[in-house]
Amino acid sequence: MAKSRLQFICQSCGAVHTRWAGKCDSCGEWNTLVEEGTSGGIGSGPQSGRNARKGRAVALTTLSGDIEDAPRIASGIGELDRATGGGFVRGSAILIGGDPGIGKSTLLTQAAAALAERGHRIVYVSGEEAVAQIRLRAQRLGVANSPVELAAETNVEDILATVSDGKRPDLIILDSIQTLWTDMADSAPGTVTQVRASAQAVIRYAKSTGAAVVLVGHVTKEGQIAGPRVVEHMVDAVLYFEGEGGHHYRILRTVKNRFGPTDEIGVFEMSDKGLREVSNPSELFLGERHAKAPGAAVFAGMEGTRPVLVEIQALVAPSPLGTPRRAVVGWDSPRLAMILAVLEAHCGVRFATHDVYLNVAGGYRISEPAADLAVAAALVSSLTGLALPADCVYFGEISLSGAVRPVAHAQQRLKEAEKLGFGQAVLPLGGDEPAGGFGAGSFQPATLTDLVVRIAGSLRKEREDG
Image (cartoon, rainbow, N blue to C red; front, top):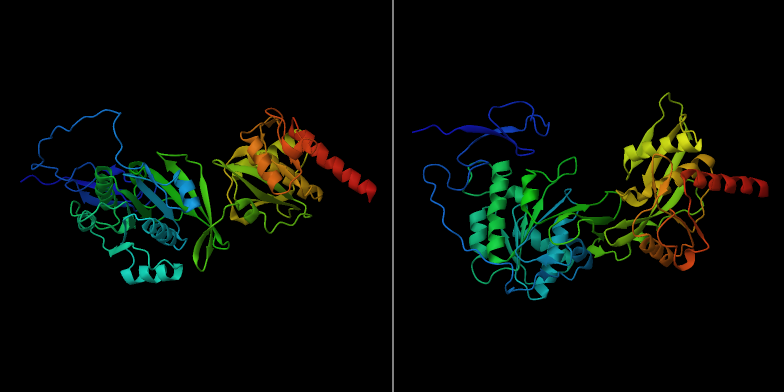
């Protein structure tokens, strides 16, 4: 009998190696290669080897045809439906990741109860908690009377046999994918082989029956979903549940969605009764704002189709060190270095002997370059000690030449700012003219130097009046 060939699988990225090594060549992680046989590993199907059957022809069909069910199942939780693109798509697989204790199980319990109350069959399977623990959470959330079907099981074959008995479920929640194991693989639960094989079996069931499946995934210290990245490619949508320990709000962020936009967010507030929807997150992020403090600028940002106003705080202080500090929370560090370089090279503003600290208030994280103008205004305001106008918002991208470049969705940003009582705006030239009450109160600098001159002129006028 031929000896089965051994392979070494990286437990971090899923790369296959022919021999053991201390460091994975693909992802650079140390001590992550685990020996596994090819009979049940990556690259082998459920019946690999001599007993593999001959393939059978499958029926081909056309793009046109009748759709049996509604394409989406709306949960009734507005922020969750926004992040998923309008609800759960039938036959789809969704992966939700987040830090331990962030509220993933709480959110899914509330969603399961809301869907069950609408007449849908919901099955909640937990591999980490007992049924009694889930019932305790449901009582705390006030949804204990919802007709949600519970189970505590980790074997994939037993789970699929259970949900196949009776009416087809509309939604299956599996918490979590790292605890599942299948008879088709010989490795331990949580390994790359088991996670991938279990996900394949569950997704195959979802596609063949039309039931939506939600998989819960743990995250690593770097914030990425633990396990092989191939699972993220297998599912239809990937959502990250984010939040800071010192803040009571949570953000459900979409990073992949085959049936909707990939830049939407849903905002929730954690309370003793569970998660509460936040329909206007701008008020939440601006709730503790001190209007007369220097170094603070309000940025009008966009998250998908939703405008969000958030305060950017900067502190520029003389440094006793030979190499000044540059600390950033909630923004990109290389982007801050670029803004500082542009201010020094084109505007004559010197930061070489100063420490620079930048923070996005409320623990919010900004990813779009439209925040450049607000960051530059906050830096100059902190350096000069002059508070910016309290009713002014900033947005615009800054190029390396010092030019202020236009950004998308300017009118939506201005409408959100006007709704919250802002009367002035600093925005790029080009595009449509500012609408609403911003016509006379808007300033459109062509270069970053124009903004610095305007702030310096305000400082000079304040000193003359004083």
